Length: 329
Image 1: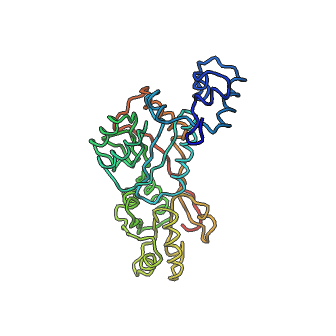
Image 2 (image 1 turned 135 degrees about the horizontal axis):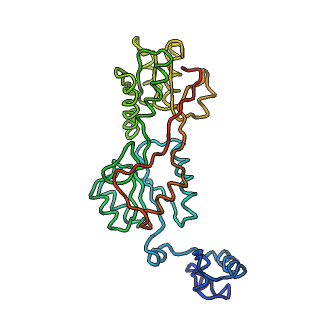
């Protein structure tokens, strides 16, 4: 080994006094290899001392898969719920031999996007379903991606989908407001790319319960919230899309002298800690996991290994909504 090149498995074998095959067995956790625990520890110590890291491209050639689960980030501003989901999924994938990689390019769609993703030779790609086309899915599979999965709010005709049912969220909020005697409902639809689509899904859910519910398009600014709060024809029950938008609007209403909940009841979603710290405390929708990260990781692994078929239309539901009533409604 020289100073101008990284250590190799041959260097580790020499330092540990074992064969290169033994190094491979130990560092790849081969369950069928008959290697004593003492030897395994010696190999691990040598690898750590030399700073050896297995070559990902060599692993791809050897196993036929890279172990990368690629998650191109959504154009929408993502909240803590989604970030926690990816963190936990990454933890569950690691013992199965995968690395979850979040990719920051948020705009490309279709075949141009697939070409960029495919260049990383991922074993699996999980991405907003509306960024996929049939041609892009075919390209990803041809490049070696054994699993292509969509994030969606319903079944996808192209790929299996991990689903967040936004309509059920809106319906849950609307039922609560109606039960509290609110007759004129409205739902906030954020003026943010990507988030607006989720807002429209939640609006459809509100209208399942209250067909005449008003749509209020709202930018995430104090000025925009003030324009809504100073209207003379305010509804008496508002679903704020999520806690952040609900709190933005509630603050503007209070500044305008509108009483919450006496004049206008408000419901948010995500059940952030902040919802219970403000006054009045914000009624919110909590999301109970219906598919654990462990189950999701197992599903991805089965698709990659060919133990399960990726049927378009298959749905893996992520969360179920549960209303947490507080004093804002």
